[in-house]
Length: 247
Image 1 (tube, one colour):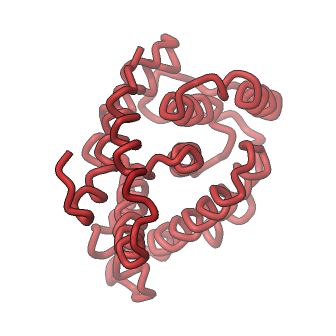
Image 2 (cartoon, helix red, strand yellow):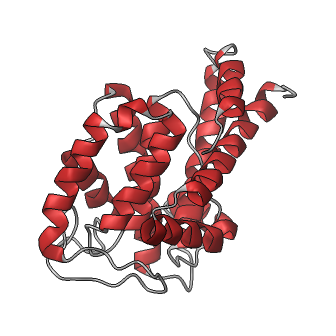
């Protein structure tokens, strides 16, 4: 099982610098929203580059790119803002929160399915794992929330965030947007526990999919936990840079 001592030490170090100056927070936030949006969408096949995502978020249309890709960028930013509001409320995860995040992800893209559990069976392209039948989605999500309320609190925040991600995406409750939603849920959990949000880089897409498949088909979460621990550690680096700290 993953040892989170190093991550706890990094968090304790960062906590000694709180409250972080407002202009630093603003600068970090703009960078985070851009990188998080670009990478999460790129993992799902969005072809906007990092710079094109920045332009799209500024409200400018990028030539040669689809309207859907523009909406995916704008929607993802709105979903991040919503997740940040949920962090402030610090409430336990709920199906309403999950559906609300998903509704923002598919807004103006597929409004008929936004925030609504799927009614038909699906196959995850390229994965060994087959999600449960659609008739079991509602009961699966109820069990997921029950696990969250009764088992998850005993886990380390990083492991809890990883398990929320993996177990949610295993159910695959929505027609589309499950991956983006799961990565938002990971950061919701991390941020509620005082960890910086993470960006799962598109370059790690293969490792990401393979480690999720291992968790889903073999009930072995170790590779996925290692991956999440690595991106959590990387999530501290922008703070060290702007604060001028060597860790």
